[in-house]
Amino acid sequence: MKEFWNELVTNQSWLKLVELSKEFDFTVIGGWAAFLWTNAHKSKDIDFVTDYAQLMALSRKFSVSKNDRLKKYEIKFDSFDADIYLPSYSELAIPPKDLLKGGLTAKIQGIRVVSPEALLALKQAAEISRRGSIKGKKDSIDIVTLLIRAPIELSKYGELVKKYGLADYPNQLSLVVKNFGDNDIEYTGLSFNEFKKWRKKTLEQISYVK
Image (tube, rainbow, N blue to C red; front, side):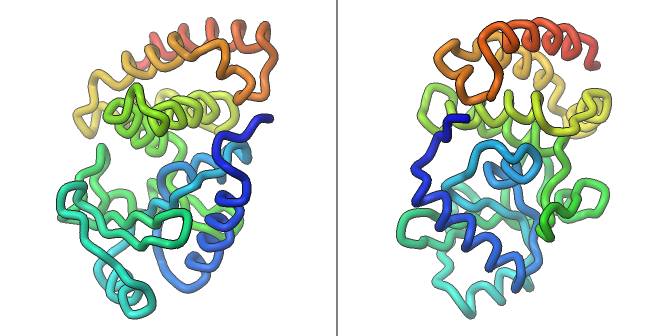
């Protein structure tokens, strides 16, 4: 399957994520969470939610800067960043404090990761805000790959987006699937005909999400 980002960079980022996960307590979101659920596309940047105690611990080891515009903290490595989201500060589609709870997390390869249904909603928020950009394209690939490969229960997803006031997300999800470009099908691991059959079935399933 075709990769999206440069493999040298993604391998460095992965090694750093594994290293961080052994020392600090956090919940992975973003592209690496999608990778952990699908074993498909590696990520460049590392995104995670944590608490203030862990932020202080990170600050003692790394140079951590505050990004008030995007409501996050950042650690800049040579070729990638680690973006840190915090309760009562960061603005995500699902509040960071809820993303630290056991009900919306799981452990994969020893790394705590957000549930696939919550990740789908978070990825949608990123795609909507970055639509038309290169990162927005990666978001759409992650969304489609999650739907194909991750153990997503659309009924749970429906309950989640309703709970957090994201009523239009099922419609937006249909748009991503419907408008997924033919040139991007190679990122899914499906043949052209397999993808067309999958898309028809999935659009029908999403139409039942309330």
